[in-house]
Length: 206
Length: 206
DNA sequence: GTCTATAAATAGATAGAC
DNA sequence: GTCTATCTATTTATAGAC
Image (cartoon, rainbow over all chains, first blue to last red; front, side, top):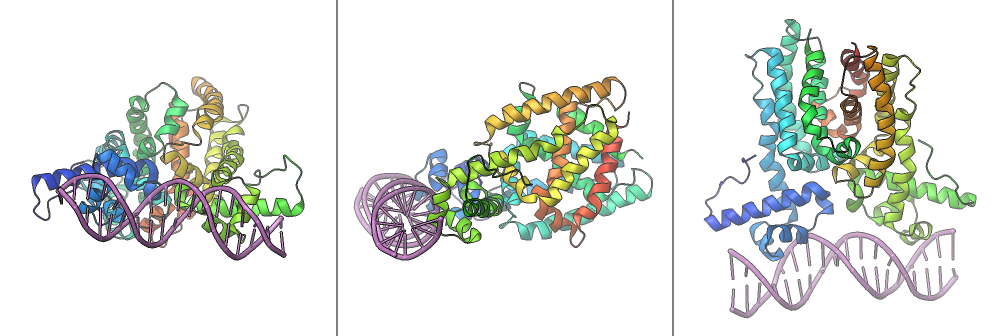
């Protein structure tokens, strides 16, 4: 998950380091508490910097949040972007499921950052959803439709197929506490990969 | 979704009416903004009452939220509770999926109220998750295991099967804006029931 | 029971010294 | 660049009149 905070303007090492510290702390705090539920105090404590120092690097609380969302958007969409129209249809889609689940396992905070935003109506992300996300999805849906038409995969509704992949994989990050509360001591990610693979084989096999 | 606000203590009609007004307004506001993102001003405006009047009926902002969560918990778990061990296994599970999806369609605010809470670590709900929810799930898992053992349904991991049902159905309520942003003009709930039915037939058929 | 006015606490942001 | 002190706005909650 490295894509964020690229030096679009030249920065000193210390500037870069402090921006990184702040964004890392903000990710921790925002993903756990949502935007309104998070305070600059929490973020500055987490980052080990003073509150005014935060605002030396970012214009406002909003600006930190914005930077996080936009900086992580690309990475968030990346697994779908790499869906290869020239690959084998079913393995290609199963690999996408696997990548998404792996993202939930490795980067649950990023997932919950977006989840927090979207459950609340995505006030700061709606343009990206209707723009970048929709465009990418529309493009990949053509591929999926094609695979269906050629009989390579079952005849499933391509949009809802993608919703299924998102919902089933991100559930393990976004609703982690509930999953763990129900499972008790079992580790969710021990069984989830095989379970989801099995599910999508069944869904996709013609 | 009527179960909430039952008269555990006798109340006048006007008391009951105002409590209802407040809880209805609070559901609207909390589900859209989360707990910290909501203010008593928003809730009192939505309810058409003054802010101090809210606090005449409820001790605090927390108390309103608490009452909402606990009052809706039963209704939230109801579809799973009615899963009948003596029914036909596959139709019984498909009916559960259908009920849950119908809840997402009819009561998206309730779904998002819980979603908001759980993404943020369920600070005010953890006991209920580890208690009532886990107990109910454990009980129903036995039934599902039984059906599997008897070859009536496919051999699927029962806990993850339930997670799948929750995640796929609640996705349409919790991530509604994203679903609609991607679908454009199509109405999600026109296709979702048939799609999910198809998916779970494939998952469950031995 | 309901309201206006207000207290008390919290939180985002700025001033200005170093 | 970084900090302490502080301003200002917001927000929860209460006091007290009607």
